[in-house]
Length: 276
Image (cartoon, rainbow, N blue to C red):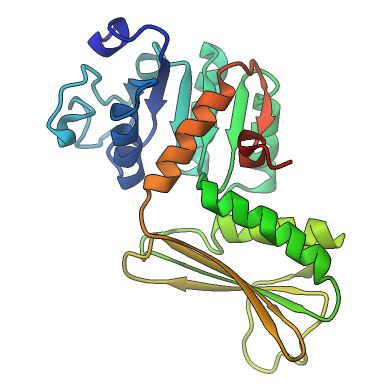
């Protein structure tokens, strides 16, 4: 057992996947600064130059937790794993967590329908909190969008515009897709049938039942999302802008606390924040 764990009884023991990445480091820093959480494990991919290094070395601190690619070792002392990696990696982590009884907070995006089903099956054994965006503000925005969609169900065209940094590999963002799902559900539509992801050339007039998506990638944009309800004579825009990943880290720790008494089941940030 690491020094942190032996000196911190009663605290939430948290492991972090992708420990050397930007989000991984933000999560580790948030845990390091938390009063009720302690770092219990740090995972990274085989071959990462960070392997073998203390997970909080970048903070000028010694946690006693070494970054490892060995899932058994990295999860041995953890109660919950926070995972913001890639779908394939998250599913591998899920299998290890099932075997060890470790709960999962998942911020990974880009899952296929088949992969989402695998997560749902895993949640029958361990508690899983899955959300495309852990930000408290984003999830409040989702609730506002649900209300707006119901009130503006006719006579308004709906477009979702999102912007992220140049390194993001999936599009549209998981948050944008979640916004579309929330709006479509509120309108009684199926997003798979009404979403429009590309427009080029002679597209014809806009289908009033569609939900359009536009994607921007560039620079170091953390995450901007705007939903436009365009009617005749007026436009309503609901926007959320992230200036730091810190909000995702703090939301993740709220999810860790929420899962503390949940033995199994699939949850999202609406559950965590009481927005049902």
